[in-house]
Length: 343
Image (cartoon, rainbow, N blue to C red):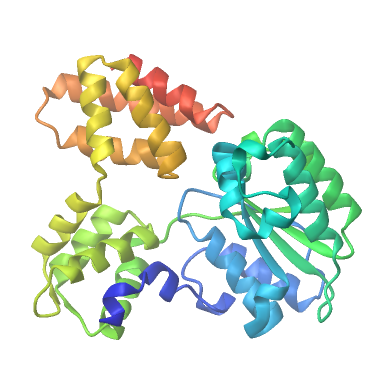
């Protein structure tokens, strides 16, 4: 069945800025810039799944129409600098530049390849528009050298290209890079808007969802629309009659927690730091989770565990401290390992 195979977060991604849910102030500002034909470089910052990428794609669609891919390029900085050469050989766009599909034969450094790729994409003018857009997601993963190089590229190609940088940790961007773009803040939507949106998607998918189920989705998602859609889609796959109940939502929530997160918690409790480090590497590199996403899921396991209340309070405090340090321009892996060592 098509509706069960499509990923709803992609299927229902807005095609226009008017279709974006929430973040009215930032979206209104972008609309005004588009109408004035004076779009600058942009820096989107806010929590994971707060709509930054959706707005970037909607902006591109609004500017360029159906063929927006010709003038809109997406890069994920965490793929470049967390996965490195293994990622570069998987992306067919880069084969011509690196000259091989074997990561062991790549002689250039990742940062030199990054500079070459961005220079090439930014330097090519558009054939049917005033400028192109390069969207760099997870920009906080760029190291200092890459950020300084990007700053110079943004200055050099300002007539042919606009950059949109997206980050959950703006403090990890160097000040000269942040100052090159208009900074716009994104956040999660209210429960009322989330429930209204989720209910509208349920109607389009031919589902009947109870009020209790909607409340459960809102409680679990906490304004995160992507998480809300994922939860409802998982629940719909377990429904035999297209009816979504509160029980199905609770089952979907439990199913969203990766087994590796549970193993990480168990390793932390037993003090097996080496095992915990291997799991952290897998979650960050292979699964592509951010440090904040790992902490959020770990928090959910901790608060529902059967540990003593005093121990749960201690673990939650450790998670909160790690989350705070990540916001202060610190490496995710280092803070996750430090948190596990303090369990």
